[in-house]
Amino acid sequence: GVGGMLSLPPSMVSDIADLQYAKSGRRMEGLLFGTFTLCYKLSQSISVLLLGILLDVIRFNSALPVQSPVTIVWLGLLLPLGCLFGFGMAFWAYSRYSLTLEELSAAHQKIDDME
Image (tube, rainbow, N blue to C red; front, top):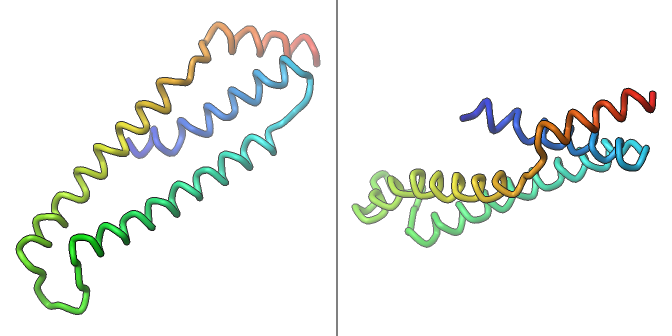
């Protein structure tokens, strides 16, 4: 899963950059990868913010040597529920990516002809 998470999005951005170059003749990798990096960092920031809010909601107190039973149960549920939410969002985002191998191959052929 981690290998796909770390390699698939940049590969998709690279494919979009090639498609854009084939259509317009302009290279836009800097803009595309910059936007990708900004969105990645924003999503990480939002995740940390939400986790902090959830820890407050379940009354996690790092100063206590032992947490309450309810807090312990919720701590155990945060990871699987968060993963399910993350997988659902990833599925939704990736399912909207409609670029096909044929389209990408045609774009690469056009790029080869341009150069």
